[in-house]
Image (cartoon, helix red, strand yellow):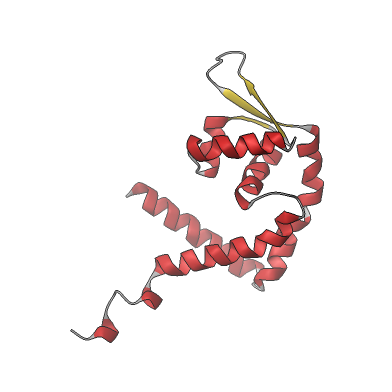
Length: 146
C-alpha cells in the first residue's frame, strides 16, 4: 500500500482542521475576553443569558451543549464574580434558575465590541463566515443524528 494515498494522513482529516481552527479561534478570543475577566465558556454562557435574562440550568446546558458537571462549576464562578444569581425555582425546588445580576447585565455593553473585533481578526468576508457557520451547523446536525 502506498503511504501517500492513505486516508490516515493528518492533512486529509476534517476533524483535525476543525480542531485546529477551534483552538485558533479560542486563542484569538482570549485577549478580548481577558478584558471582561471571562473564559471562552463563560462568555458563551453569558451570551445566552444576555439573550434570555433568565433560564433554568438544564435549558442553559442544552443551549450551550455542556453537561451539569461542566456547567455547575462554571456558574458558581460567574456567581462569585457577581455576574449571575443562582436560585431555586418556586414551582420545583429541584430546578436551579440562573438570572443575570445588574453587573452581568451591564457587562453586555462592554462585550458588544467582541464580535466585531473577532470579525476583523478572521480576515474573512461576511459571506464566507456565514457559509462556514452553515457548514458547521450542518455537520453538527448530521453527527447528532448518527
